Image 1: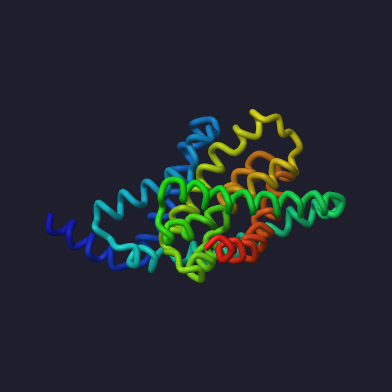
Image 2 (image 1 turned 180 degrees about the vertical axis):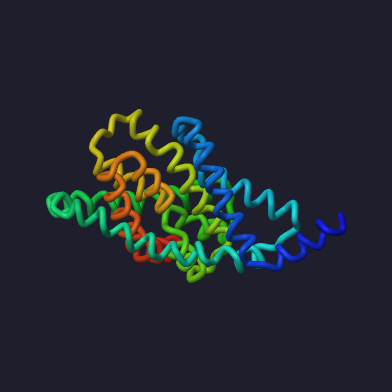
Length: 238
């Protein structure tokens, strides 16, 4: 037992432990997702989050210590986001033809996400901090946390809400779109990207390249629209 404790002390001090934990957890999530015949309820990100959180709780590891090792994956998020431009470029002509429809969809989606979040939070008697933290939930995490901080919210709470929104959007978005009869891949991608940012975009790419490209476009445009509209709406309401 002492040897095991010594090994754990050595491993816990190495940033490679938490990097490996992150990669292994996602691989396990992907394996479960594949074995489940791509069932959206078995979202690999959700499974990976549960596994990582369980490990951190069991080992009493702080998030700061975990992030020291996992920050390399965080760094690669920037490159992955930029890489979304490649499939979007392949759909450039389709984007040009639908430019007005895309802008109208992003505007409507951004306003709906903001107003519905604030409205539901208000009905449930949420505090001012909770409301402003909830409002940018459909925007990619770095932008959402920045907006929340500028308006006096809690960036950490916003990050949790953003992740939950992305996971739920990836799980339920395609099902809802099927139920309401949306068949156009571009429209499906715009809806998923606007509502559930990067996690939803990853799911859209698994389904169809056109949907993934438009989802990536919607994710970026919605971040810009929300960064402009939310402060205006917030100051107008409060």
